[in-house]
Image (cartoon, one colour):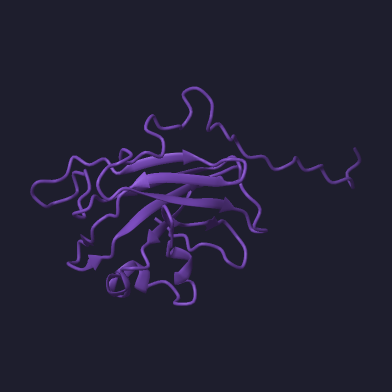
Length: 190
C-alpha cells in the first residue's frame, strides 16, 4: 500500500441476537405475567416493526408493571404491605414481529414527588442492530383523566402521545411498537 491509499474500513457489526441460545435471555414464565383465567386477565398483543413498517422477527419485548393496587415488588416502594407481585414478562417476537403478554391492568402509583402516575406498563425492547435497549410505556385509553394528569405522559409532545396508547381489541389491548420512522413509538431515556 502506498502512502496515498487510505486504509480500508471494516464493516459495522452488532453482537447477537442470542435470544434463543441455552442460557440466553429467555424467561421461564415467558409472557405469562398472570395465569390464564386470573381475575381481570387480558392479552396485550402487538407487533415490533422497523422504520419501514416491516416486522422484526428476532426481537425480545419485556414488560414490568405494578399490580392492580399500583404496587411493585421492589425495595424502593416505601408503602407498607408491599406486594409479592412480580409483574414481569418476556416474549420473543415471531416471524411476523408479533408478541403477547397475559397480564392485568395495573393501578395508578405515586411518584416520589407526591404526584400520581396513570396506570401503565413499562416496556423494554431488544433487537438485532440495537446496541442498547429502548424503553417505552403502554397507557390505557379508558384512563383519560389519569392520563391527562400523568407527569410522564404530560411531558410528551401531544402529537406523539398516541404512540403510547394501547388500542382495545376483542382479547384485551393491542400495542404495536415502531422502532423508527414517521410513526416511531416514543422512547424514554432512563
